[in-house]
Image (cartoon, rainbow, N blue to C red):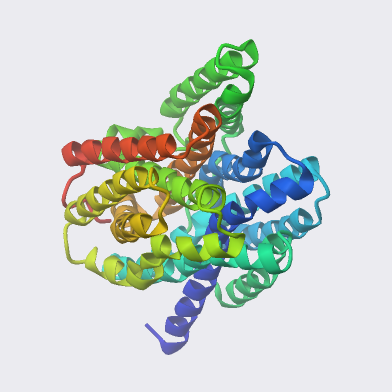
Length: 451
């Protein structure tokens, strides 16, 4: 490969890492700021949780569509639009004067993120050979997760010393940098997938199903699980998702290739991504609330206290990605998930004594275990599909991960409201991780087919 194109693809990788990091920052930066935001705007606990879940729900519902759309129209077109929408929505979120304005801005952020995030993986898979993908994905995750690691500290610092509004405004310079670098360096690949009609019907059923299901889960503890306004959305949401899956199985060009889930190994990867994000929400969002409420920490202190749980991601992701090129994915993923599950059980038990020193080993072990799950799992999913399906594959992977986060906010928030304590939600998170681990033990194959 010529020196110019060689340098260009690494510049693009940097821009993609910045964009992915920006999305991850918004997953972790809000949790520490939530009590201050809640008090400033006079929000109830359930309403405050909607500030997080409005973003994740739209992101989860549309990210697979973003992957499909990127395959059809080209990432050189979709990626800049997504970055612009995300940046402008972040500006609006910082200026929001009430719940309605903030929720609308968060919905638009989710829309922009859904257009951005699948491209960060799909563009890497196009630029790099199968032999280099593990290294490239590892570097991508290492840079992007540096933002994730800094999220709690940045959120605490800005909230305590400036204003919670800056947790959104800080996105603007990063978004502008990633947008300019990507537009200057990206060159569309010579071979493109044939353009086909977009599955708007499937999108409608998917968005309807996920929205109703999450709405019912979020409002269940506030309105009562027997309330018709809760039961009806839950049942209609499940029915809508059932219709969506039946439609997608019959389509030649589905919005989401749900037939991939017939492959047990692919399904186990998706389940692990879901469980991993569920546990991250439990730690970063509800762990931040635990530290501030039960251990009387300030927002900045809580942010610093959470750093050990995510520090391993930027430190080890590149090395783990390189290992995934040489070692069986099954060994890496199951070992990491076993360690992370044990760590979550430790955290649940340690929460009883309300001591940060007892909590710290669990935080460190969780981060060390989870870093062995993300990049190798992404690698296994990507290698199992053809190059023209990379946007579709990354969209499914990110959908599973974000759905885990959305369910994490809904279920952990419900447990917190119902019990008034954090220990039940930590135990529930450990159970979700152990179930995912059990599925992986019986389903994940050592060597996925590489295209």
